[in-house]
Image 1 (cartoon, rainbow, N blue to C red):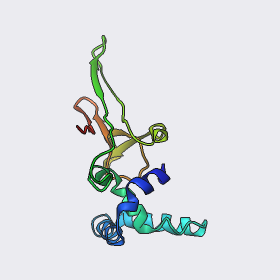
Image 2 (cartoon, one colour; image 1 turned 180 degrees about the vertical axis):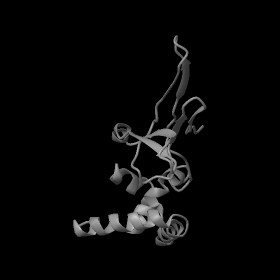
Image 3 (cartoon, helix red, strand yellow; image 1 turned 60 degrees about the horizontal axis):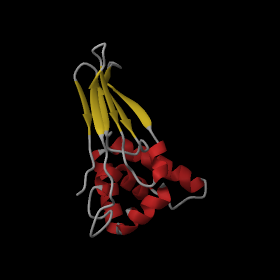
Image 4 (spheres, helix red, strand yellow; image 1 turned 30 degrees about the horizontal axis):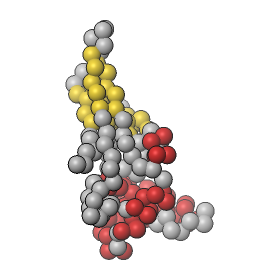
Length: 155
């Protein structure tokens, strides 16, 4: 997964891009910046200094970057996703979706997250396919209110 996106996306970023992404995280998400700096130190201690703070900051913006021409200049990788809402016989609503990502192995990396308010109450739940190094989720549900999904669709 990392090798795929290093070749298809991150290799196309310049040192200036990485520096700007790192600065954006430090300015706008200082707590996250501290966590990424700690992760980078741990990677370095384990013999992987190439996984530095700015590289991790770029992963934080992976989803946004993957929707740009930086990902595949002159075109985009063919991928689409599909979602469906269905009413069950008992009146409940079901939301199912797929995410056509590349490489195929990444489709097996699914996480479920719950966002809590200060009183520890669930604000909404979400599902995504990649790591917590993300700026959001691609599917979110607030029970009794809304179910949202993003779609990648390129013609």
